[in-house]
Length: 300
Image 1 (spheres, helix red, strand yellow):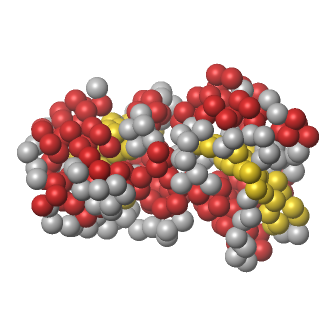
Image 2 (cartoon, one colour):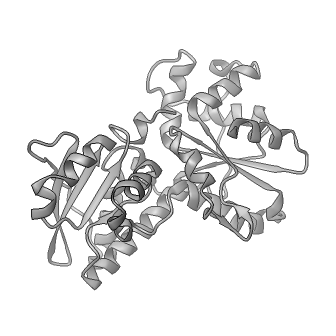
């Protein structure tokens, strides 16, 4: 299991073990230690990870910012080239698998951007070893996710460069809680600490990633800025009539109007794809999150 991989790496003196945590984990963890629902325990988590033996602790928001820049750039390119539309977000691995299984004709429409986890993983084996002056082969990269599909994503055969896996192991929020409890760490009494600085810089655009509609909004903001150098007005979403978990809006970029939609919950994808709406209305950008409410409500 991924947990066994992490334990082995932490016990191996040769390995330099780095870890990054999704924003959704920070707000869910307190509940598992009877500290209340939605309490932000970020500082305690960083301290606990150091107690467990991780060498460096980073924030995945660095990767989220990179994904958003990539998706925004790609959207602008597609706008200039006139397609292919709609462009679908590709950061939810459960949704990507759904496309591969049920909608292969839309594979070309998926954004080519890697997810925040995989971009972080790539940087951890390329940029980070240069900055830290470490042999990339020694680096063992772990992420903590609210999502079990992230394990599958990390293990996909194409997720490696030069024989090094982008991500070596993924543990869920609950699995990390189990590791903390097994190590007899008194979580509630821990002092707060900070993440390590390199690769820990982020803009805040990445932090709304876990909420449904967050990726869409951050990418559109960036796209509007690239094209016009202007801020995006607040997006006025409307629920799509007769379809649960789906909202849509129209945004203006460079004097043209673009139809966007946010789909929230894997089962709602089927009803959306089979609806007259999808055929009649030309959508340009569609965000899909398999979990109802987005990553914040993930099953990990």
